[in-house]
Amino acid sequence: MKHQSQRTINRLLFTAGILIPSLLIGGTLVLRHTELGQDWLRRQWIDELSHATNSQIEIGHIHFLQPGRYAFEDVRISDQESGKLICQANHIEVEHSNKTTDLKVHTLQIPDTTPVIWINWWNDHVLSIAKYHQLNIKIGLTMLNDLPIDSFHNATAQFEWSSESSKLTVNWGKQKKPLALQLTRTHLHPIASTLLLQTNGNEMALGIINEALPLQVELGEKATFNGQLISKYHTGRFTSEVDFAAEGEIKNIELSKILGQPGKSAIDGLATLTVNRAVCNSNQWQRLQGTIIGGQGTIAREWLPKLASKLQLRWLGDLQEETIPYESLHCEFAWDPSGFTLRGETEGAYIGTILRHKNGPILGDRPESVIRSATLSEAFQR
Image (cartoon, rainbow, N blue to C red; front, top):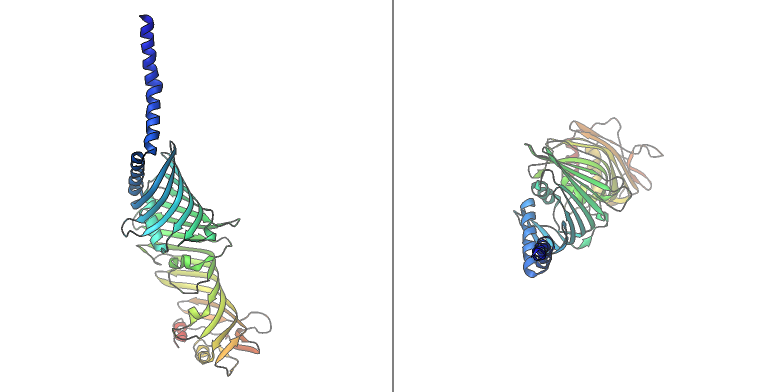
């Protein structure tokens, strides 16, 4: 009788300690890999992520690897209000705990979405996930409209939260010192976001950051920026209610884009703009200082007299061609609301020359001249 009671107790202990947990774990694993279990698991994650990011989330399939580790396939994220696709990924590895979530994205695809839409989404949705939850993201390859962006290869992102602000830091590129972008958003009224970009000697397409500029300028499809800038984003659009500042170098500028008019070609050629200082406040430029240098190009002769007169330049070569070829362009400028100055070459045989023909100077500076600011726009209205 005693042995029978012992056997009964042993069976109960085996059932409670080994059999039931094994059945539960095995049943859970089986359930996760059935169609019913997959629907339950996918719905659970979609609901949690949709609620956390206030976005529309779609997940094609979820692989349960082990507790806290999953693999998502065919993930699409769309803006909740507009329904616009923000990004999609073919495969994401997820490690999740109470305080930290690590995401490894194999290939991230981004549609043709403007930076403003992206930043609105980050600010209003992703940064509201949790105040103290740490989210780390690593991206293997980024594709824009199915085209790979080499400069975004091996991108990493990190999020930091506090009660006062949220911060997103992104580094990308194959270079030893990658490009860095940091977006900080305040949580207290008035809410504003600060965008800080540091290219660290690398060149990036100007079009990527064009909407971060207070004034939208078309400089050509191949224009690139190398330097640093800071801009504040406020009330759904980029403004200059607070400081915008930049310094660096813009290459491959198409002069016809900034000095031309529809249907007219006043000047053609490529140039490089070195920005020593650019400051904007209250939606008004406060300071622009730099140097623009160009190589060979052409300029319309009919434009030269008005340009020389308005900008108080010396017209040194009255050539007869309708379209005049030039060998070099060199102009140092300093502008503020009170006026601006223009200076030509600072050394060599052609000191003071702004535009030079193969046979000599075409336009030269007047070092004593300070020109009123409004004259600049007037000179370009031919």
